[in-house]
Length: 261
Ligand SMILES: Nc1ncnc2c1ncn2[C@@H]1O[C@H](COP(=O)(O)OP(=O)(O)O)[C@@H](O)[C@H]1O
Ligand SMILES: [Mg+2]
Ligand SMILES: [Zn+2]
View 1 (spheres, rainbow, N blue to C red):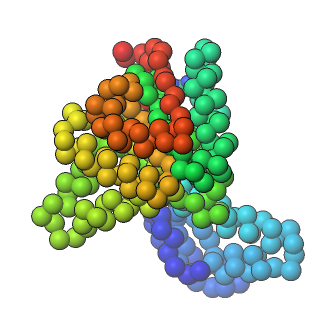
View 2 (cartoon, rainbow, N blue to C red):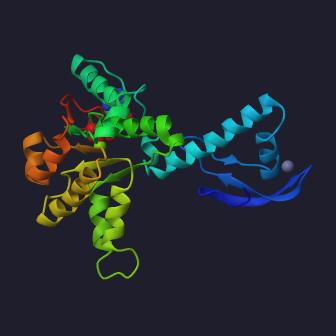
View 3 (cartoon, protein in one colour):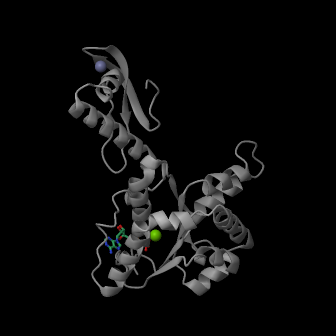
């Protein structure tokens, strides 16, 4: 209760009329402004109050704090924190299909999680793949975080950099990097194929995809490649893992929303 929250940006001395001095923490929020947490004793008392309304409110605040931490734990980049399924605009039938497929994957996540069903979001640049991929992750966390589910977003480039960074380094090992990518219940790997597809990169990504497959955990792969090119980039075995249990493929093929292509 008195420990410092994980995403504390700043700490100052607080003074509670009832409980005296306490360290007040300014905590980062997922997609909104940071919040001062206030007196921890007051929060504790409210959560255990005889007054049901007060207790209900305080318990909700506590749940919100846990959810916020799990959302930040996903490493979804700041610029995609506001991306949801609801604010992804489907103007054409093809876009409507993509949105329905991604929304459907989230709605059926109970079952997808049970069988380890994955998804691939494939298509050209600026078509809203990262928006929808991060929105799916965010929606799953919002629905299941309080049950203990955890999720993570990473780019293929960052994964490869993290593995390379362990070489000749005595801190984090290569196995640690893989474990951190395999442990989350849902992983989004973005920007697959932006790299040049060396054997090393293929091996690294296979290790992650296969490790998750073996533990029956869903993975969402986002790429600018088509299925055939993706097979060349990741290898047939990795793509077969992603297609297992009828893993879904969502194709994004329309003009860029960025207007730069
Ligand atoms: N259908 C859409 N509705 C709302 N915003 C969109 C849509 N498509 C793209 N965008 C926005 O355009 C920008 C580029 O989309 P992004 O998801 O990064 O594309 P991609 O990953 O396919 O290259 C983002 O800011 C995203 O929120
Ligand atoms: Mg993208
Ligand atoms: Zn107090």
